[in-house]
Amino acid sequence: MSTTVTLSQRYASLPQCFYTFVKPQPLDDSRWVAWNEALAIQFGLPQSAPTGELKALLSGEQCDESRPPLAMKYAGHQFGTYNPELGDGRGLLLGEMTAQNGQVYDLHIKGAGLTPYSRMGDGRAVLRSTIREYLCSEAMAGLGIPTTRALGMLVSDTPVYREKMEQGALLLRVATTHIRFGHFEHFFYTNQLSELKLLADKAIEWYWPECLEHDKPYAVMFNNIVERTAEMIALWQAYGFAHGVMNTDNMSIVGETFDYGPFGFLDDYEPGYICNHSDYQGRYAFDQQPRIGLWNLSALAHSLSPLVAREDLERSLSGYETKLGQHFSRLMRDKLGLQSKHEGDSQLFASMFELLHQNRVDYTRFMRTLSCLDRSDISEVYDLFIDREAAKLWLANYLQRCEAERDEQGQQISDAQRCVQMRKANPKYILRNYLAQLAIDKAEQGDFSEVYQLAQLLRQPYAEQPEMEVYANLPPDWGKKMEISCSS
Ligand code: AMP
Ligand code: MG
Image 1: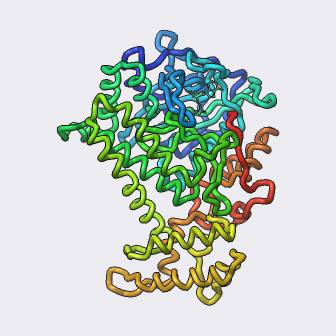
Image 2: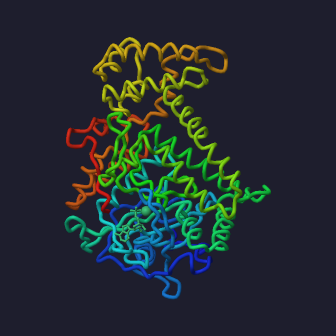
């Protein structure tokens, strides 16, 4: 069994203005509290939490003094305002590793101490936010939503002060890339145009080599970013995920959900849900995410203007809404068990959302109940509504629409067949904020059992898992619409 990891240094081969080499500041007495065995196996890493040299490397306790890890330089628009001062303020890229399927991933540690980009921060991550990122990235992967992953989590005796004294922790993050929209913004706004071009060349070489087959590779690259972003956000909207801090420095160019902070999954279907306690204007409210995606892409387009013709940028941007809408409709049809496209479908979705909103119905519970529909007892569905008559009406429309569905042999699809498919698109279990909070409360007392249980459960969110039924419960009053602080 391998006790080491082979890392490449392709990002480090870029010129020095892309990053700063930083020696990590190790945490006191760091120890593993989670090791993602399934992910580790994909990289030929040990199945159990590493010890010795490998642990020392992954925890930042030891590094090659002549070539330490690096903090990336980037900038970004935060809440609509450009901030040139950003960069990895507490994260470090150890290097890249190749998975057994041949794909290359970044290996990054978050919480490893001060860097030149820490600004007023301390370079640390607290246990609470580290657990949230660990759990949510696993939950998103379980749902099938592109995301960075968490390879492991260490806790330590290093005290970290936020609103109170907390325990310092470290997250090991695996991502296709850590290049954000903000990387391009940095080079554009500092007028480092050859570096801007170099970054685009490298992004193409590493992530989209097929762009080189076109005569306008940078335009195709931007179009890819637009499409990936649209697809990611369509998934967020279909699954009820609110990111909370969609600043351009938190947007991955490959469309992976990135930098988990004050995120939240919808409980009741509330389009204006704001999960971020500091988002006073609701800029990043749940229903604003598609619009903000476009805003962020426009900011990126502006930064790519030295490389891509204006009309090409505009053409890609103008395709965003259609792409997102098409993807969202396909996801909603999957969720409602509808394979064919019909003209009235968007109206059917819109009336469903309206009804869920008016009746404050739990989104995940509703969709799952609909996926277990038994016509002999339809009350299970409309019992979720205050206005049962309106729900009955919608349901009747929906069931009528279902009758138009045919299988390949032209046979009508039965409720049972449809429901089997629907249960693959409607999770029984999601990372509700109150569940994450209960796991954190226990972990802060030294008991990580809930963290493991949740991580395990959320890797298979579509499976029934009868012994875990309680995790599908609706949130208690205190756990509804929790707003999470940005301090992490
Ligand atoms: P975020 O929106 O949380 O992703 O962070 C925005 C910027 O602040 C990034 O450049 C982070 O690296 C930096 N940052 C966040 N928290 C800290 C911290 N505790 N210490 C240093 N930098 C931080
Ligand atoms: Mg960030």
